[in-house]
Length: 228
Length: 228
DNA sequence: GTCCCTAAGTGGTCGCTGTCAACATCGGGC
DNA sequence: GCCCGATGTTGACAGCGACCACTTAGGGAC
Image (cartoon, rainbow over all chains, first blue to last red; front, side):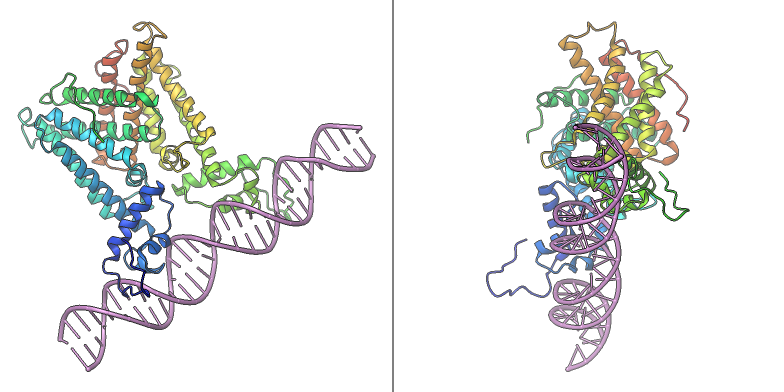
């Protein structure tokens, strides 16, 4: 990350892993400034290379941001995986997953917005492949948790089963997605009641899923608020 | 919107209503390009004025985008008002409102993203006043529909009442917000089942509200899909 | 009717950006 | 040992947001 500039610029001609360095710098700047309006040239300066070096690794700014966004999806997936590691009940697992998701988004709004903000769509409204894959993996993680929760109440691999799981996934994801963004935008309030409101939405959503997928128990589950 | 350029540039020195013309041009370009990365200079060209004229009406690009965003909130509010005009039942009204909301977002993703995308946040994560007002008005519209729906089952103006209404508002808004964005991002699929999935989320959300606010009847309400 | 004050519009300029093209440097395969 | 491709550098260009000083026009005070 830092360049030794103490001596007479003994920096080697070749960086070593500039691609990674640029992405890391981008995540740093994005997290600090909470804006995607940084320049490739600034990232190059941070990495200690010329203003054009990044173009050997990314065709344009959009391709770089796509890589950053992909990292964001991976980080969010890891958060959710960690949060559910030692939980067994489907409702507990989904609740923990939801809290991890919202926390991840709220803790780095600019990154979260980059992931979902449509900066990266091309003319045909399609995402770059690298980012689409990462997003798909994260989606599968949630789908898996719902699918596991449905075990025993559905016969697997039927069309009906898949339909219900897709529906539940959409309810879960869209509710948490919207909640995250409203929290980030401070459009819900007052601020001191945000946690309680959030928990209310979460429990209501889980009860809704219980209606779709009976294996997920209904009724209010009280858990510790996420420690952050 | 259009300038008469057929004769020998008889355009008057003063435009007349440049402020409005610039906002209109911005909405046009935003809707066409589905991107906020247009330049103030292009808007000036479209309006037939010098590249600096817009700065007499907007301090900077952010202030212009805030005005555009405010118009977006007003348009969305109007859509919802129109959609509920002749409906009486609270569930019908909220369902129509939700459909109008999602439709509005899906029909102009770039505008919707501008409204919620955080382009406009300052360093303290605060929105420009003009935009905050428009957003607040739209929020009140939804809150009003929920509040009306709750009439008769709550004693108005109690703290408990307000708490429940706030909770229901958050559920409603965040669910529709997230749904809109996932639809725009094409992160739910397959595409040919989107309408059915959407309707499923909507009905589930309304059932959830029915749990919070008994005056809103539960049970699946089947309505015509929104014509667009 | 005249004057003048100010809002509104103009052209010029600056530093910055993304991107392109031409050149420099290195390291691995033959 | 040579050469070629991947990687990094320097230079250049047009377009951008933002600021400046200047000009214009139109309406209110008198």
